[in-house]
Image (tube, rainbow, N blue to C red; front, side):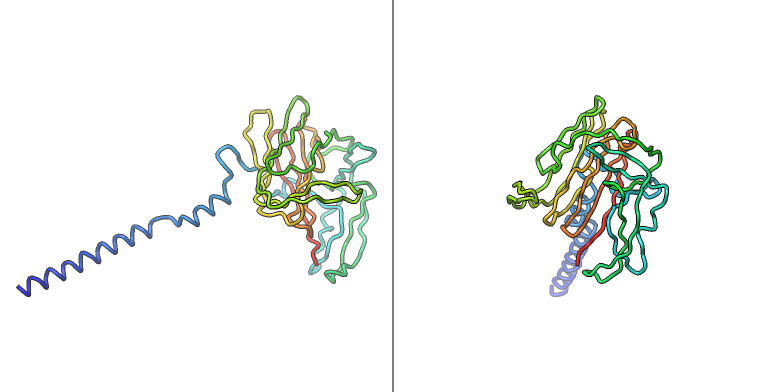
Length: 270
């Protein structure tokens, strides 16, 4: 009798352990739900949009900020400039492309305590460009109706029987009224989880130009809308710093229906 009970207990223990091991193996094969969600949030937008290439390919071209640069460990960003660079500049309300005309001056940054190189253009330059196929001369442009595209706002531009719509989305965390250098008041929002999408009337689906997790006391602005590469479609230049101690420009080039993005940024924090 006792032997029979002991055998039953032993068999019961083996059965319980086998069930536990099976349950553990099943759980270990399940995906990590939290990690999967984070990964998907970073790598996809939604089923109706796709991303334009988020980073520029230097083999296709470059853009360059016309400003002062800090020289860290003898790394001089201005050495990339040569006679192949063009200047997109404004004169009397018209925009032009021409070979860059500039000088580089030595300086010193008291804040960072490092040497600087300042690129000073002889024109009212928006940026320097090194892209294949650029031609000197006047550049067709469209008047900017709203420079900022806040969340839940959209801005439309028409050019050569084509309509381009920019659409902002994101979270407005706070709102305040600011006064600019001309004494004009304007509403400013602190924005997180921002995304700028664009769509065209050529039948392509909506595309995401860029997304920013958090803006720190700054926001994106549209600086230029026109036809830089002369393909009959609109190109855009945006100011898109993440914080108030950064200058950043982003160029969306229509590129004959195969849009490209080029960006440049420089930090000037203390």
